[in-house]
Image 1 (cartoon, one colour):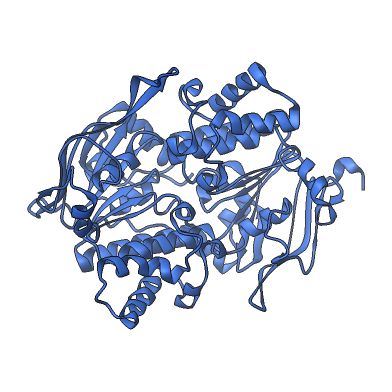
Image 2 (image 1 turned 180 degrees about the vertical axis):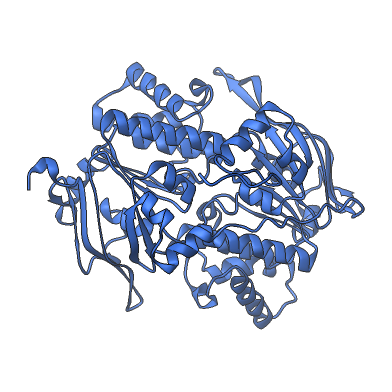
Length: 547
């Protein structure tokens, strides 16, 4: 075959097995697909189906020798990557093939600034340093939608929002304009407006450079917008593949049909105007100082939360939406007293602002959080059973070991995990499965108030719908109160009783969720909703014609 007609990436009969404790489990079973030059192929399927494992195999980033390939080959530009040495792969990684990882907080170095981490890539692969490297770094950050990128060069990963960290990861992956970009859920942490920008950026780079893409996602709407062909994975196998429109309009496999039909049911908790107020604040502020110079004088402030007032009643769900960096997560952390803030925070009738850690402890059982980054929030040294049971040991020490075990088993069942897996560790689960563990850890204590910070961002469509149903059932059974922070407005619409829209630390619009989705008053909210509900009706409107 003429080299110009060869596929850039040709995967044939690839299997991946993991050995643990004398047992071997097959995670990917004889998978085959090709990616031509300039083409985008999407891998879709539920969490744990083998999508990410297949992608990591291409770059030989699996934990060898625990992982092995019983069969198959991975040919890139005519060379089998599985036979390449580590030195040879080091040249290919980042230069010919780049990857955007699913969890940016665990992929970025917490000890290095953003400028240093992007600059390292430019130095290693292009020999660029100094002012030229800084200019290229600013250009990359601008391309991926980081506002005022010059002010972020000296920032560390923990000083950025989840969405901003994901943008930095995308900038690093695109720095050398690789021949093949592997994007593992690259837009899960991004709000809808930036998501549209990133997809447009990737399309522009593909058109300009001829870059190919392997795009892993659970968002079928994105697949339709960016991919040429799609492979549907289930239980480690490709069950259906073909051109995107063909697979989407006439799916042949039952699993594909179930995946396309999965969507959270719009059945939000009704407003409770007469119920007691669980959480209340008035004029809450979280300002982070900006320090400059040798003496580190404060020259200004980042106003992450700037004068927010709200009240959440028992049994309600407050939806909090807005662009990445708008202050959504900071607001949730402040209400739970996990970061410092100014202004009253009234929880269950008592002002908890200023309470010492020991005095706060009795309140902790009734207020829980599900973090956006499940891997970063789960201890890698504890088994899943110990992680879920930890809160019970602290807040309910009178429970016997058998009672604790029963509660852990029930919590894991509630979130769709096999209780037998509780002896395993977080790194042995997929991103979506780790998020289920985080939810189990929160609900096992039966709290009154739960902050859900992007809890569905790492989940496939099937489990998104299941998780929304689970959260709704738990809310009705236990009269739970939620603060639901998300950029996925479809999920918010299915759960929220009340809605606030944030921008630059302020609330720009608020009201009953059904009314706000139907009739947004500010230009910003209208743009946000238009990006989320492109080609379809917003909740409460008449059905839009199909795209």
